[in-house]
Every structure is written in C-alpha cells, then in structure tokens.
Amino acid sequence: MIDFIEKKYIKFHLGNEEVYSHIDAVHAYPPQSDKFTGEIAEGIVNEINCSAIIATVSRKKADINRPRNEKNCEAIDEYRPYHKHEEPRNLP
Image: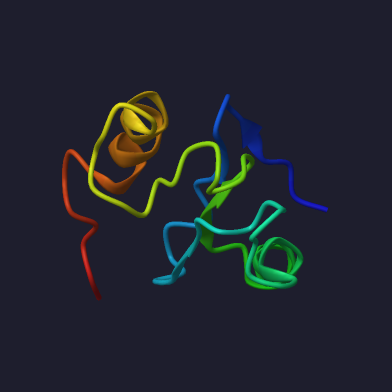
C-alpha cells in the first residue's frame, strides 16, 4: 500500500518518474463525488505507482476543478502547484 502525502484539501503521491501517467481525482470525496473515484485512483496508484492528486474535501466545500473564487481559493492554492514541474521529465 502506497502512502499519500496528506494536505488540507488534497492528498497526493509523486509516483515513479519512469511511469508516464498521472491521475487527478478532483471529485473523489462525498457528497457529490464521482462514484468510487477515490478508490479507483488509489487502486491504480498502488498497482502502477503513477503520480496522483486526490481531493479530500467535497466539491460542495471547495471545487478545485472550477475557476478560482472566494469559496475555493485556498484549495486551488494548495492543488495547482502539484501540476507544475520545475523541469520537464526527460522522455526516452
């Protein structure tokens, strides 16, 4: 079982840099979650060790898949930096 780094609004796993896949499960927390999204994402991460970001709050509280607004600004500030890379990974 792979450990995720837990933040206030998300949990993430950086994955193996040789696996060129990433999972974003931004609607994984109930209510109004996409059914089984969090469990599916965690299962894939455990199977192939790819990177992943999984929301740990409901989109009713802070929808990180929407434009920035008063309700989600703190969550977006936490979520978006994990999509940025200082240097692109070298592809084979």
